[in-house]
Amino acid sequence: MEGNKNPYITDLSVELPKQSYTLTIIDEAGKEHVISVDPGKIPYEDHGLPGSILDICMGTGIELDHACGGVCACSTCHVHVLEGLESCNEPTESEEDRVDEAYDIKPSSRLGCQCVPNGTMNVRVRIPTVNRNLVREPHGEDSMKTH
Ligand code: FES
Image 1 (tube, rainbow, N blue to C red):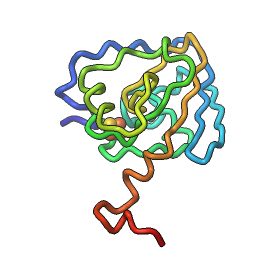
Image 2: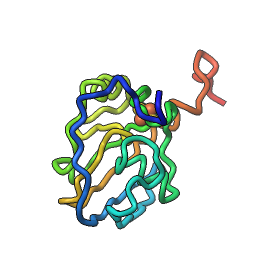
Image 3: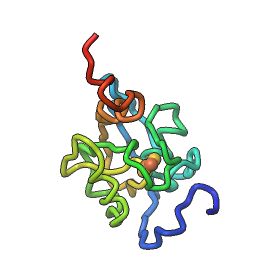
């Protein structure tokens, strides 16, 4: 596998932004991060698809879990795209399969590493709080105990 691209995903048609736009991320604590996305800086951090929400988060210091490294092989980067979903690339079948495995799925659910806005609209995204629990909490009966 070359870099962090999944060679099995070939049906991508991703339009990169040609103009700057505002990406607002609401983190798990409810804090809003407003980013002015500069098309000239893409890829920001080389995580996930270039220009993806994960790429921009990583490049601007916003935490978004990405257990598989951004290759569409987990669902820890699951986000809800509250506004601007129409300006994002269509999800691939692989992405839809991974989203199905996430918790708190909504019609606005996308994988942060696969969702690339094209810059024609401002985009507003929320990171569901359950993402963190999926990665950090131990599995099994012990995790169900009350303390
Ligand atoms: S980081 Fe694993 S699917 Fe996005």
